Image (cartoon, rainbow, N blue to C red; front, side, top):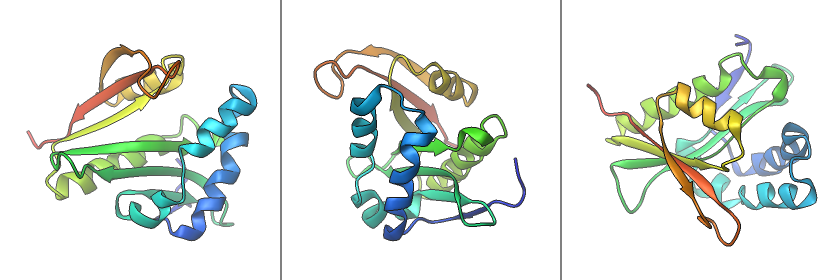
Length: 162
């Protein structure tokens, strides 16, 4: 991973920046419907209300390299949730995603959280493999999890101290 990246908490002004990378970073996956689905997953409220558990990585020129949007559950304080993560494809395989997750685990552990959850689409083989490498347990396919035809796979990982 490039040592010249800087990491910081996102602000509301970063919302448009993150939206602008969704299409190029996902390479048109699932066409216009996929682009709209991704944009709807990143509403402004994440940049207004969930920033303490979220992170951006930037290059020296200020361009976005990666982001993680997460939060501690209001319903179950022992659980945190990683909502959406993106890494510039030019930086894939360099440990940047792992760095963001490791930061999130430490931050949530400091808040008393004991487990982290997240989801992905069943066809997202890269995400499924990434989460497996990080020690997440994967569920069976959850039919219609996010609505009709929106199946998901759920992941859970303990972050409790041994």
